[in-house]
Each structure stands twice: as structure tokens, then as C-alpha cells.
Image 1 (cartoon, rainbow, N blue to C red):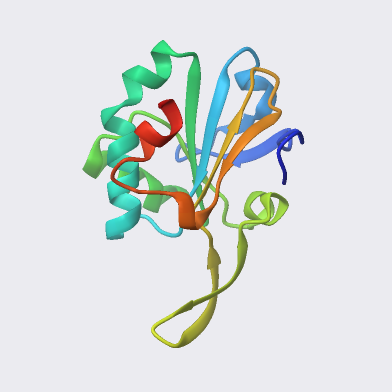
Image 2: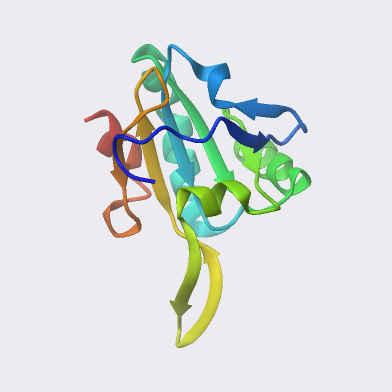
Length: 149
């Protein structure tokens, strides 16, 4: 996905099994962030930074959604443990991360594997992407400030 494109209408199911669609967020700007895995240090830092600034997002007309390929049960544990106020999409079939172009080959400690790239998509009130934060741009402990300025 690129700036100027619209996010897919079907986003996936959240931690409660509810189907989320882009049209549910019409009239709100959207922060859709993809992350590698629940409960890992970087992903926890990012989620908690967004949580701690959640009211600022709401005050500025944003909805916040997280996406990873873990299942609903994993997401619910993550939400409960860190008191996350926003939904997490359980993209277990990898449809959304594939459509977004954020799933692919990664390397860590000399090992190659498939995974989700930490990326954030910002949309306008119609679901059109206005900004993208690439993996190398995201500072997990300051991400809300990067988005809100």
C-alpha cells in the first residue's frame, strides 16, 4: 500500500471475534499499526506508548487499531496484561498484512524467517493513506509523538 491508496474494506476480526471494516471508522482518521508479535519487548513498548497517549488520539479525531498474525486469545492476553484500550486484529490468515505489503522475509542474528514488519499507516477520514511510518522510522517508545507531532 502507498500514500493515496485506500485501506482494504475488510480489516479482519478483533480479539473478541468481531469483524472490523474500514467503513466502521468513516469520519475518523485511523492509526493502523502492524507489529510482529504480542508480548515481545518492542511490540509491548509501542503498544504501551500508544495506550498512554490514547486520549490525545481520540481528542484529535483518530481511532487506533493494532494488527499482528497472532490469534484472538493471544491478543486478549496482551490487551488484559497491558490494559490496551484499542482493538487488535487477529490476522491469522495473513490477508491484511499481505494486502498492506508488510509481511515478508526478515533477518535476525543471521537467521532468515517470514514475519510482519513493524509499520504504521495513517489515514484520513475516508480511509485514504496520508502517511506511512516504515520499520526503520518507528521509535517504539515515542511513536505517539511521531504520529501526533
